[in-house]
Image (cartoon, rainbow, N blue to C red; front, side, top):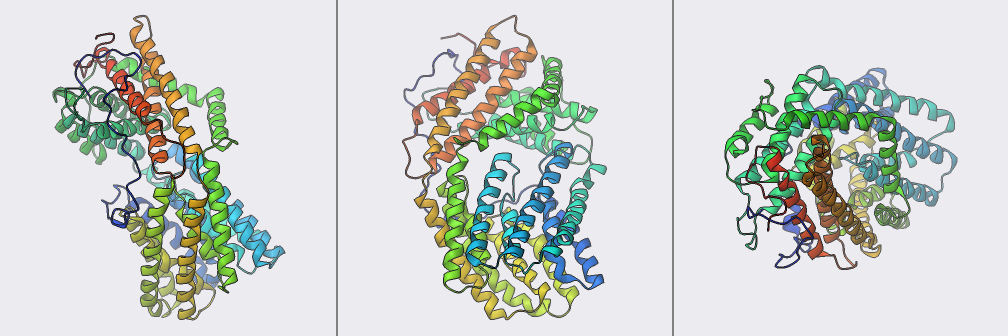
Length: 585
């Protein structure tokens, strides 16, 4: 960001660089490259092991390992919600358990009423599309819809009678209730753990932005926008986490003050001094992430008003009108004009084609092909291509691992249970490095689940899985290329309009000396949220094929103007007094 005073008017579009596109070509190397593991990889890994171990060992003790597929449906719910504060996590995981049970119920009823493979595949594809849309609309986060599709598709092809369904659903709900307890158990030890991690990420991103703010000459090439985008997203996520965390506590008050400093460091990066110094921000992040006391930052002008504004926003969100607004926003994401609709159509067609093709070739478990196709569909076709490579490589390597571990799993039922628990942990531990690496562990676990119902010929299992993987990946990606998503550009245009409105509102409140500090803070956070949404929409559209040209220059101009408006709020808040002045030429 430039340190030169600027005028906050209509954004200029001259001398703008090209929009960084998400399309980098279909390069396998970048899709398969390993990244650093997530800072919380062990949480879902440990949670799913604990949530699965108790039902697995209980069924082992009573000699009914054939029912593990139903308890596993509930146990896998422990994978969700680990980035959410506990107040919201309780509702989110409860919704996941109910959603899992609902999908399983549809599958079990269908399986009990018909043996037609064509009908079962159609229902499986429809369920996969619905689950994809609902998970994307609610933004439940990883692992997304794939777990739902895995459970419901497998249940479709399991022998079932109507009289058995209530008991099987009771097993799922019971295991799901235990998974809910496991997901919330850490709150007894560290009540503000998710908030602390979210704030630590915001401080770390702000430190990077403060260390590399970009050139002072606004016409020079600027290496800093990516840092500002990352910092804006991290700060916005931290605010959202704190707003959803429940009543203010002393720890949360300290966290809110830390986010104020993180926000000040990224909205107007400049000379690294005082609270905005990168090393001080990193030190705060390390202490915030740790188990000791939350650091207490020095007071900044306007901080008291800022925290009062946060309380006001929290009250609005919890009020009846706030809940209604949230429901309306969800309905808009699910409405007829939703950009999620083309992705749902892709999922429906791709899963159906994969299932029918495998059935035509005589594969006994076409649900593997359905799950493979469903797992490919990401935000755009470029990411879907990357997932196709990752899924294919991971599954093919995974069947080799299965072949190696199968003799060990057949030593005893306890050995089989332990193998499944090990691969469940390994999958979550590895998947944050790269999806293909996690798939190497997921594949043998999925194959070993079949062993609970009785031994199967190893060659048959391996051959079917390889064929289903290749056919599912090929037909799934073919559907992604045939079903275009022209609504991606429309989403960018809507985000541009929303950003323009948010910027205009922020400029009015900043320029108005009579505006309440809480109103300025509210409009600033609304502008930050709109910039995050704009960047997400732009990246998604840039990775789509066969669509209208993106308004690249307008997008870049809107982002630049938005960040300048954010910077213009800094003089009224103290920590970054070097920010541009409003109305200066």
